[in-house]
Image (cartoon, rainbow, N blue to C red; front, side, top):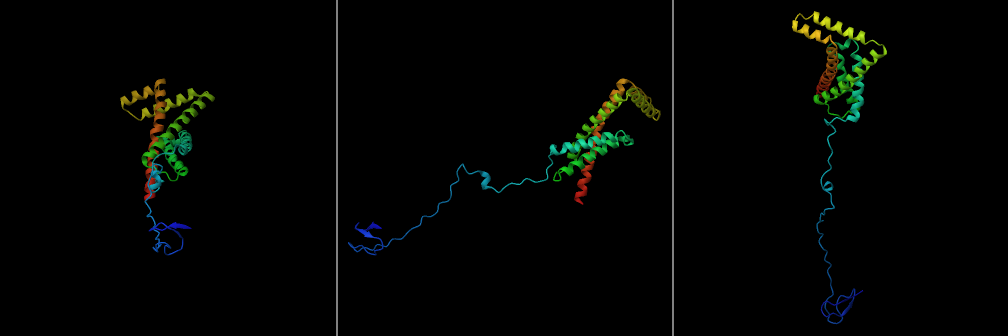
Length: 215
């Protein structure tokens, strides 16, 4: 390989130390260029420059795709329990709300079930359970043609409650509930009670589970 002499311009063969024309030394020093820092462009995403973000597995957001099967099963159990002696003081509703939290926890173990989350799950099971309870009651009365017997049973329960309460105003209220409008209002009140008591059961169950986890 040939190159010109840096002093006189004469062609010099590579490897020759001095120029044959002017006797100038032909020593060349290779200088490496410093590396320039990389230039960030708009094509570089910010996510590649920052450490990856991993959200906490514990979240208070309800995964309804997993919650609805749990809620529906708990509501069904609550509806059946409300046709047993556990209907007293709404125990069947409270149990149904508690079971909604237990079933959801099994389907979503990483869920952070706060009392508010438990209350919402319980309310959902109360809506489901109240609807199933109303359907079972309606189906039973239609199939057995027993609405008259059901109405009579409701009236007997109202009369027994009125007999235990000597307050005249309470007796007037009891008399109203013996009418058709009163019985309809009583049924609606039962459905509302399903939602409220089931929500309370869910909140109580969630509170107990959190205390147990902290121990």
